[in-house]
Length: 389
Image 1: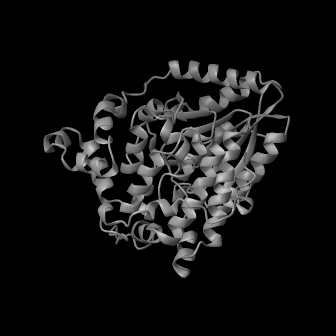
Image 2: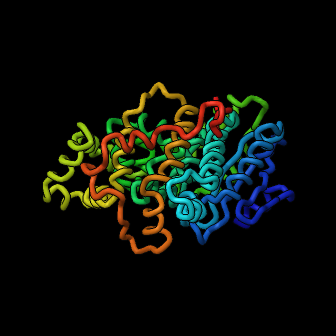
């Protein structure tokens, strides 16, 4: 990164966990750079980072000298591996059955940040190299220019911790080809860069070693006052860079297997589970990616599977703001009443990877239980996200 330092302003600020700087461009305008900076934790988001990002991005949004922004992650392993949910876990364990302030604060502020990115106006670039999961995907999907590489590994793994694909998943999963959104939510399948392009999570491809060249090109663009013109400038530049990539994105496994995915994911939740249980062993042997995905699904929280299924049938007429409002209630309810605390314990705290789910399987979940988790714990005028429109 040393070659980039000559291009950045000397007003770099930091709260250590997120670094902020600006690229000086030939046009006289600047590009804001926000770098998630907890490399040892794969840049997982905590509340402090969410607040720092929201504050700085809000400043940049209204600064006429800032033409665009780029979000990046420290190190070469991950952009962002999700949310750091240990504080929420501690609060939920301390007050079982109750919606905690810790969960409400984290999820509401995280979703407000995601919504800010979706509605930012100016071009927002995410360098989606390496691991992008959960909360990291929430940041990425809100950007206008979502770059994936040959090293991208992108997933919504919430079924493994007793949650569900939040951070806007209720909006973007239902807009993917066929049943691929439901498949991703139920299986935590790790998408490649080409998979991400196919389902619309990524919209530009570069090689991982093109990063320095990207930052250099951002300083050379003739940025102006028009946001629309700046979006087009950036899109054209990324398309040119992508066409010149030495290594192109490989074929998407999801695209090649869309008919099979649709077949497996069709029907009621019980029918989907039957479809999965009856798949031929020879098919799984020939498709190890599918065997791994279905194994994860079958080991996941039954409540989470139920929620992912309900989520996949939400109306596409729900606005992004409505989806975030629904998800906030669902997320805090999952922390209070469902499998979240046990899932986090097993995967992140004790790391025994042996969760004792609340219900042994989907069939044993009481009728209406999952639907009850989707009920908001707040009146409309008291909803923490009531100002999202």
